[in-house]
Length: 527
Image 1 (tube, rainbow, N blue to C red):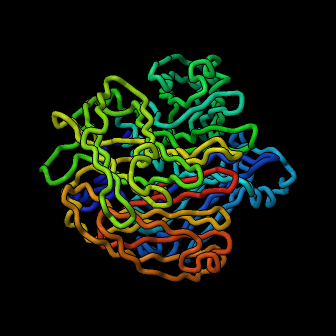
Image 2 (cartoon, one colour):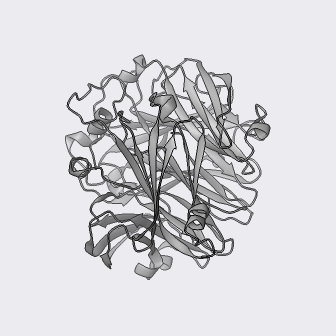
Image 3 (cartoon, rainbow, N blue to C red):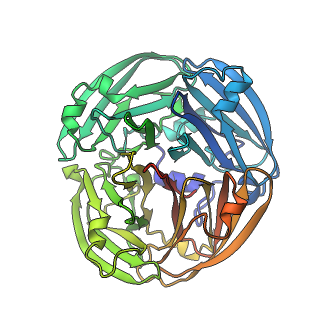
């Protein structure tokens, strides 16, 4: 794990002193486990954002398809020179090697973007999707093969386990973990785990995977390695922390759950387990009292049997905090305020689920209204962890799909340097026929925030380079939800596309959700 302070410097965050001897990033890559079976297949989606954000005129893309054992089946090169939507479809790649008749395929798709100009980030902004007509699930870039030894050493500065996601194990729901190995052969893959169930009881163990060959794709069904998993979890979700001996690749895992009765998947990515991270670099310095220590905005879905849960995982650096929750209506009016909603001692290692719908049930005229929660963490003794990760579960009760989305996101630290940042730039995918909802929030770590933000939305599609824009305003502490019924998006985006959000505030944040009619919910935060 790279320290958060080093991350800010290497990604040239606003206000950070630039490292003049830092090598430019000329290769930005990602590698994804890919699967096709009789029920669903895989795709990767991205926007030609380098042309918009970095003013890079051309990016060369190398696509490599490998089978489960790591053997190369196809390698092709494409040029990205247009700001439009793009997709890499597993079915299309299999057709190119005359393997489309293969009903069952497990392997990987690697993408490598090359330029002659600095791309800043060594990982590109891509979205992995597993899907059929009735469901889809999405997550942003996770694993990648390191660019060089310096890249690997920088990211291995601190070795920590991976955690921060929901696991289920019943007769119908089965949890999994997947990754693609790097170029180094692992003679015996080894995993130590700690499971936390819904009662915050912990269970530990270990297992061996045997030899893992270079670029081999691994799908681990946790019940095959942890026989008592169903008994440990009962009928509720839990979490797991994975300590491993994998090397040579960035070990951000694809994690989630399969459902048998409605053949589908819900996945997210793993995150750092910082429960033993106690160095000075693992904590943020509170520079003044004008900012909250950290905060984040999340939308609350509550119509048509929808639910919204905030998940607090036992993954923080040792610290004590008070969780404050404020709730606002869509016009920026505060309708709920609880400065002492929950006291958390990370040493207790509790797994907590906060049902946000229960809070708004007590509000006047809560029905048929959009509400947003501002989640605020106030830490004691100036022990503010630099990485504060929660989960956001949004789902629908009573339909075919039993699995919500499980979005992995960081809280935003009270960084005074951002006060002088002139704006922000974000982007997100849009999928037609998925009941897509884009949520945009104007919430800040500033305690007295009253800035109304101006946003320019630009929409792009996959068919051609056409685009159009709309301008909206977001009041302070308010949220805007956009669907395909807005701006005649149904006419412009026939299949899929992207939206970019250019704002005159550095505090804009948001998410996208696909509310499939089956009850399946896909979601993630904005890039």
